[in-house]
Amino acid sequence: MVEAKMVGKRYLGKQAVKDLSLVLEDGKIYALLGPNGSGKTTFMKMVAGLVKPTAGELYYNNAKIGVGSKKEVAYMSTEPFFYSYMTVKHVGKYYDDFFEDFSMERYEELIARMDLNMNDKAKELSSGLAAKLKIAATLARDAKLYMLDEPLNGIDIIARESVIQTIVEVAGEGKTIVVSSHLVDELEPIVDSVVFMKKGGVVIAGDAEEVRSERGKSIVDLYKEVYAE
Image 1 (cartoon, rainbow, N blue to C red):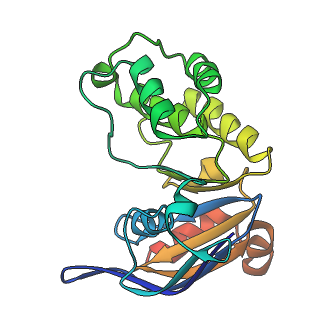
Image 2: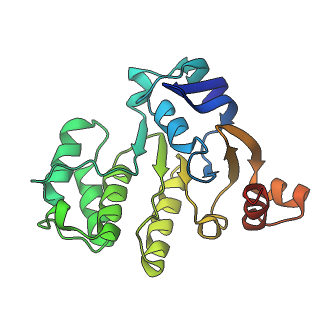
């Protein structure tokens, strides 16, 4: 579905992504792992078509990232992206106007599942509820590829289980999902493949079970080893 060939991205004097080569296949859940500054967010934004690579080639279904791919890629950023006047209901209408594949019915179901209220002001939500709102709005799209940047941030340990189950259900519909997170122990049980990023490049990538078998370690323990250096 996605193929990166020696992709690089430089912001002024900073190299955010360097010589990144990676293939993401259809119908899998990927854990995109690495500390802050490893290039995860920049890579996601390039796949989503929000920023352009400064080097290399990046393809979605054998075509360069562009208008066509944007229609099939749902990206959830870590930053808040709602206007101050918006209620939870307004957010749904905003998405419905903006994305052809957005389902208001699906959105309402997810809002109820996340224990949100349609009349709540988005700016007044706690960090955990605001995170749930972003997840609901993103997953209410009928996209082919979902890219969720730190979706579990701010969500308490009890609510995480519901969020993770929702992500698994979306994946069960044959979608491809890429989830970046520092909460590796939460992701390990549900992911098919893992991608470890460090200093803008990929250091380990592959099927999660094969990586565990080859390295003789859990993904959590491998994470500790890779980033303890």
